[in-house]
Amino acid sequence: MDAPAIIGCAAAIGCLALAARAAVRVIRPHERGVVVRLGRPRVRTRAPGPTFVLPGVDRLHRVSLWTVVADVAAQDVITRDKVAVGLHALVTFHVVDPAAALFGVEDYQRAVPATARAAIRAAISRVDLGDLLANRADLNAALTGAVVAAVDDGWGVRVDRVQLEELGLPASLTRVMARQVRERHSVAGVTPALYVPSGGAAKPRVRAPAKSTVTWAGPRSPMDC
Image (cartoon, rainbow, N blue to C red; front, side, top):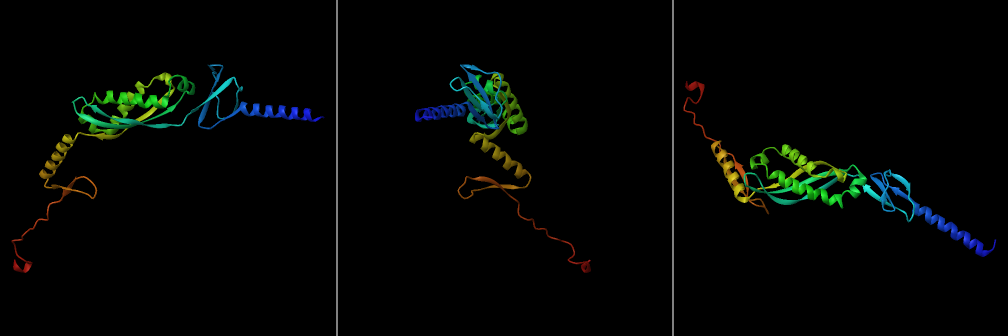
């Protein structure tokens, strides 16, 4: 075999190797693959492991099934009894339909927290401040239900839970609540005080009353009886 034939065979083998490499893709265990062929998504979702695509014809999209914990941006909300509170929450969700998550919404990882923010604001506006402070578990369950109802079913995403991380009260309301705590302790015979920790703001501290001195007016010993 002459040199040109050898070069031609080597080039053909190299092209076949490159084509095979381009045709074989690997999907990781936490992912599912969605193939789009000539602009049309294929019905079957590709499972983890090696999968074959047609180079130049197919386009493989990988969708993660990992649970996502997204931060809902802090916002000021007015409760039903007209009290402004600051809220910061976390929303937990995961993909249940990779094709819907890919084509049902532009970016589900941004759309879900944005929708949750609006749903939380609407839910808090229907609650009084007393109910907001009473039971955090019931509040989280109510917020989860509101976000689940707000997220579109066509997005292929399931909301697992919503957790309220921080609740900020107005400074005037905080002072009123602190005064009420001091009054209750005063009625109970405990004197509240304030202390300033190093590098921090003033915080309430309860000081126990001094030990009482009891004078025994009776006999000093049984022999005095």
